[in-house]
Amino acid sequence: MRTSVDLPVSLSRDSAEPLTAQLADWLRRAMLDGALAPGERLPSTRALAAQLEVSRTVVTEAYQQLYAEGWLDGRHGSGTFVADMEAPTPPHETTYVPAPPTPPATWIDLTAGEPWVRDYDRAAWKRAWRKAADLPPRAAPDPHGLPRLRELLADHLRRARGMAVGPENILVTRGTGNGLDLCALALLGGGARAGVEDPGYHVARTVFAARGAEIVPCPVDEDGVIVDGLPADLRVLYTTPAHQYPLGGRLPIPRRERLLAWARSTGATIIEDDYDAEFRYDVAPLPALYGLDPSRVVLLGTLSKTLTPDVGVGWLVGDPELVARIARLRRAVADRTSGPVQQAVSTLLERGDLDRHLRRMRLEYARRRAAVVELLGPVCRLRGDTAGLHVLAELPAAVVPALVERARERGVLLDSTGRHHHGRERLHGLVIGYGSASLADVRRGCRILADLIKNAPR
Image 1 (cartoon, rainbow, N blue to C red):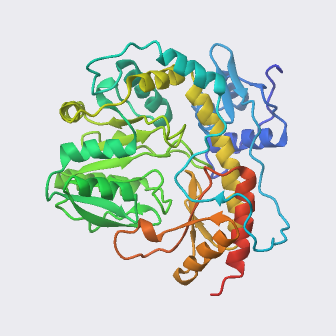
Image 2: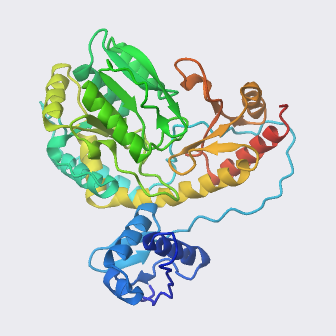
Image 3: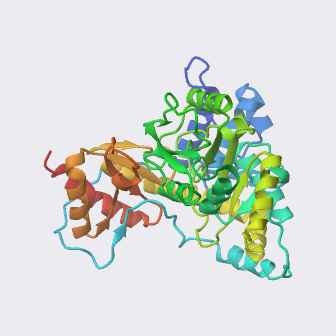
């Protein structure tokens, strides 16, 4: 391992770009160019701040952003290091000769919704499940979840999402669908009106309808749910403000504040699905709605996108009184999250294994996202490419069905916006998922799709 180095950083106080962003950009370029090698130790925040004659906060916030993106690794008592992993390669020009329209032996799946599960720390995985075997069987599991896991999740949310919550705010679920059902059980009844983004996550519509609610489609635009015109009689509103599904919008702060003001004036509860907020590219995280007003928001999170859907663990964050009421109702319907599974997740969090996995996957997904933007950006308009595991390729309505069919003939599976709408389809295109396909397959699939788009009749 190399020792700490002096960084020849030059920051401009005359630039419109904040000093923190300038420093983070300089460090990214240095890591991409090889000037900073994996495992190399960076100066302490105090030392670098003194060298640059800036506030220590400038350096701390730049380091924190790079930690969140997976560029840096921290070792307790030892300092800050360049992460020991390959950095994402920058976009470059690619010459492509179209292949004949013969389906390959295996499909390239570019539909959205699934993460990459083939690259994980096997030693950490086995260790977590050995530890889970130490948990004795329980006759009456706590409907809130294991106390230790709730403590660890509170710390995880503080570090990852800047949320000041305690175990009393958290209930461990089996994932987003289970969290939605528990919210519906506590907040809805027969005939209650539930708002769902349109287009939006179809599971939310299905779960609320199964609990007897009347589904009210709430239009979204390129930024997220449209607040103006929201009905005043909604009991709940389901929304995905960090990365709207499927259009990819990121709800701006002014609109978040208007949405919360609407909820306070109508008495509605906002159900915030934070499903892939951990994956961000070239953007800093916006605060969760829950952090802006915990009294009006229930936040749902899951490990389905960050680790694997096979674990079946998520979390519900809310006001302690509401969380306690949901726990009582949960016990009444005999709903629970597996204790051994919770123990395994606790071990992954406690040892830092989940954080390391997240940093590794941020870089992996960043490479795939860069490939999608490089190959599809020149032939269509992309939305939602700054975060998450999917983008929207906006296209004329008339060409979308034919593109899906022709891509399938070439061995590429695609999803369109059609099935995500509850009412009339207003925005048209393809929902391109890059989570479950390898980087090589993402490139091959996007080349095929780019060729089809360029040759599609308009």
